[in-house]
Image (tube, rainbow, N blue to C red; front, side, top):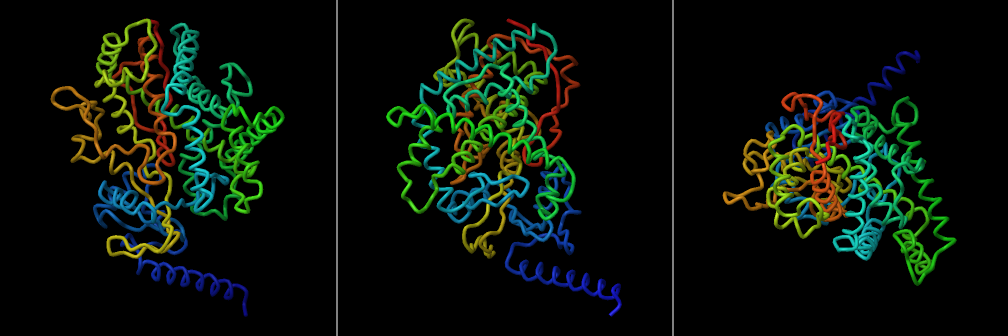
Length: 485
């Protein structure tokens, strides 16, 4: 047979097989746009603004629909009712985690016994080291004071806050994992912060979406995903060196930090055939804590300062409340929050407005699930659109506008909402939510207690539109001046 004819026949067979597989699967899944062979619905989605694409598709196909990215089906949940019904009411069935090929193995993307056991251990250890208690609050307050001293060194000159705001939450995590914080000029610490920041930027790019949906290309095509891999290797090796140091000085009767606790648990479970407590899982669990505890908080802080520059009237009211409740000379503490409803509402609104993780981390169903009369096969990827919840126009009038009034009642008291899900919901809810909320309150109130924020341009000209909103919504680069009060 002529080689050209054979090639054409081979390609035709592959296309027909692809169409057949799509149709056979679609018969069980929720409706959605018709996918093209091989590439699926890629051409029908704006990868630079996937939130807008999902909103448009939900109007056509309803709150539960199916997309194909490449050959892979993804069931999208759009709107509060669908997201809550899946993640909360059917929490166990939707508690699986779909993989992100561009990211090397992580506990956060594991499933089954390993995920449950190590999540339980991490929560228990974080609580033992003070998460949600006064002891961790002391650490965050100390870091807030160190942050203020670093900001003073700018002498009121314009600066990009990205790096400094990355150091503060990273140091809090370091104190939990390694026991010690680091000086802001420590070269190894600065490299670690830089690589964490760079990884989130790469993962949020449009190219990352392409790589994730065509994983066979990852190792062969050039691109920033190779930098991501090298950065991840650096972080893992950094943690591994710390693990070795801890082993040499370990006192089983006096654990100092997360690594010590894990090493002690490893010794206790050495005869357990499950092998959840291994060096590999220790390194990946610590790496997860870094990723979740550093970049999410620092990115939110960067968004927050930009919004406070954009809306100086909001900033003035927050500073007025800080002056009335805390004053100039005492460090803010978490007890203050209950007496500062406007500041609290601003923090809620910042997280709602920025919509940090538009489609959440990808879930997967753990078994065949009948959901709203559809049959979703085990292992199917699930995207829960947090944008559709945080920007619901019934719950939040004019959701596209930054307005702390979304969380205030007619008397000026804090008004909470079930639609507030920046940390997701259900069994895969963020482990460090309480720590993140503590850091946001203490870091921002401490900054505003000591500084006025000055923009280089007129506040009306500031653009708060994210420069990327794939994995995470990243704020545009900007500079500001920290003017001592």
